[in-house]
Length: 218
Image 1 (tube, helix red, strand yellow):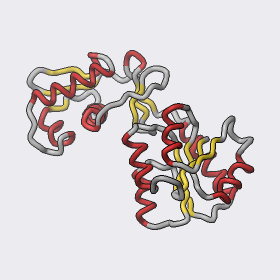
Image 2 (cartoon, helix red, strand yellow):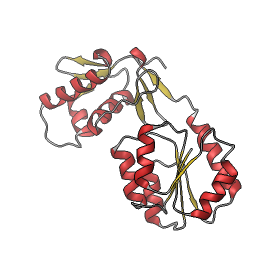
Image 3 (cartoon, rainbow, N blue to C red):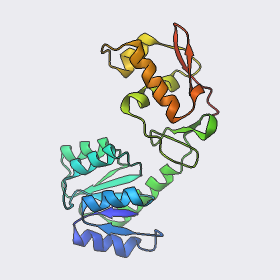
């Protein structure tokens, strides 16, 4: 587990209580250092304290999103303001805990979060490609994250929601592009990019009608 906090008291408590719980427990104060470690190493969980060096909670969560860091996370804070709670929700945190924190509450939250990540809410495609519905991410075989843009991801999720149905161009424009003007060539370009990152048949074109997702194994 990676724990980001500049609160010495909380860091000491977590280290003494959870050091034997995880194979590796890494504690850092700097948001910049935490992001660097997340890019270089693999952790089972990220515990974020809003009290950190370099950045505030909102900025760090934005860094996670921009760098496509996919990891189960909990957020703790001494300020349970609406702003921090909304940030935690937007950061896809499993839960938000307010200080002072009871160790048993933190332990329970960690266990429940880890149990959730073991869920197998996966939609499997060909060539080892799968969509993890719980994490809301697409992966290649072996668990490598597929880095889709927001448009590409939205396009795929729409087709998945309408699996076995042909999704017409107008609905795609309305949902993916929020009704904004765009050409059929722009749509085709998105489809081609998705195919390049996965495999060609994942999206099938129904001439002059729309698109349909490839068959899902699950």
